[in-house]
Amino acid sequence: MVVLELVDTLQRPLRDLRISVTDRCNFRCVYCMPKEIFGRDFVFMPHDQLLTFEEITTLARIAMAHGVRKIRLTGGEPLLRRGIEDLIAMLAALRTPEGLPPDLAMTTNGSVLAQKAEALKAAGLDRVTVSLDSMDDAVFQSMNDVAYPVAKVLHAIDAAQAAGLGPVKINMVVKRGLNDHSIVEMARHFRGTGFILRFIEYMDVGHSNGWKMDQVVPSAEVIGLINKEFPLEPLEQNYHGETAQRWRYKDGAGEIGAISSVTQAFCRGCTRARLSADGKLFTCLFATAGTDLRALLRGGASDAALADALAALWGARSDRYSELRSAATPGLRKGGEKIEMSYIGG
Image (cartoon, rainbow, N blue to C red; front, side, top):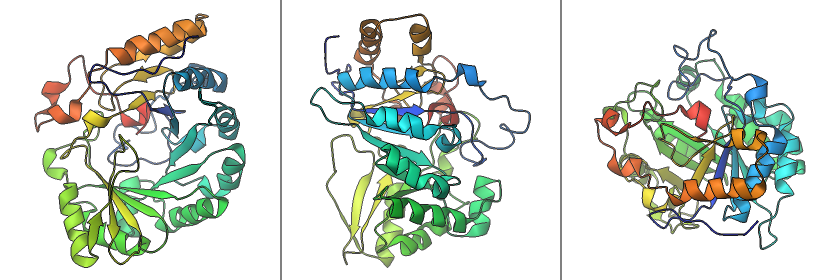
């Protein structure tokens, strides 16, 4: 197989692969898997439709030969996938053409993290990002819609840090009228702890969350609120294509991030591809369709054929949905409704 670093039509390289390992989640967050849609009767993928760990590892190996350096496991909730530690060990054993291991991370709701943190680290996971949308128990439980308490997520965050899965990042999705009053309280709690809190603009991923532009709290507003209480100054990006704008407290109490895909689109630096749990590759979080790599795998395709498919897909990529977004987002959904975040991974 010829090693070739890939670039798309806008000269963006392929550097990050986000892998959804399951479409199932034990939360019903109102901005991702609202209970009205994902209720008791919702039909999730049968196990035989999911990529096996061996299939995931094959695709990751080929992607790493063509530029991928970071792999993030997502879901649904990835820790619900049985034997996830085995997959982590398989991915951690891969090497880039330069002989380096992948930067291996996971995004989780934290519900199973405390029990699994040490095993995840032992298997080769580098770090975790944990979702937490408010320090107010009533607000957080209304957002996850399964009455899961803040205290258990905080315990999981501490367990992850103790296991060496740090620096742990905490993601807060901010939705106006729901948890925007929790912004400063969240900043206050995590200041000086070594954890990195990131504020994410409420996004129009999928079609089930009823997204409206007036529910978005712009990152500039978030940073302004925190800056009034705790003065901030901007930081440089850690690397090209980083999604979060970084800020640090002027008193040295750590840093925060703001992910502004609605108001300050970062499409021009996007280096991410997403692999769904059933093996479809997507080149944009807001895509309406993916390319079925599972069919190629199970049809006996060689590594070279899989690499050619990846090269053709990435080479034709021109996605910049967030740059084109407007309040009339349905007009951008050519080819059908956007894929749900629980299917494609965040």
